[in-house]
Length: 221
Image 1 (cartoon, rainbow, N blue to C red):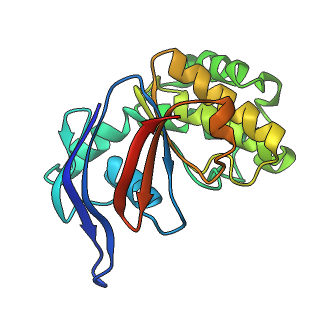
Image 2: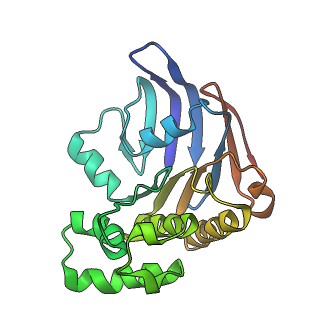
C-alpha cells in the first residue's frame, strides 16, 4: 500500500521535516503515527496524498510515485484516498448531504446516485437523521463523524486521518476511533496521526513513532 525509501522533506527555509524514512505499510494495516508536535506527522500525511512532494528519496502510495507524479496522477490518486483533516474542514454554508457528497460530485456522480450512497455512509456513522442539517448544529464529535463519512464515501482503500480525536472528550474520541477501526476491519488501510496515546491500549494497531523528522520505531501496540 505504502513504500518509503530514504524519504526526505526539506522546506525552502532549510528546515528538515522528514529525514531518511524507510518503511513499508501493508494493505489492511491500522497505523498510529505518533511523535511530538513538529515531529513530521502532518508533513508525512500531506505527502501521502500529494500535497507536498519529497525533496529526495521515494514515496510510493498505491503504486503512484509521489515525487515524479504528474498533477493528473495526483488527482487520480486522491480519488482513492479518504482524508480526515485536523479540524474536519466541513463547509459551514453547505448541508451535511452536500459536505459528504462532495468527493463523489468531483468524480461526476449525479444526484440520483448520490442520495442513497450518502444515506448509507451517514447510517454507518449513526447520523442518518442529520442529512439536511448544517455543521454548526452538530457537536464536535458529530462533526468528526461527518468527516469520517465524507472520507469513506467513495470506498477508498486508504484513509489518512490527522488528529481526528484531538479536540474530543475521551468517550467521543473512542467512538470516533471505533468507526475507524470498523472501516479497517472491512479492509481499509488507516493511518492516523495522534497525540492521544491512551487510546492505543483499547484500540491496538501498528505504532510508528517519529522524532524530529526521523523514524524512531515501528511496532505493534
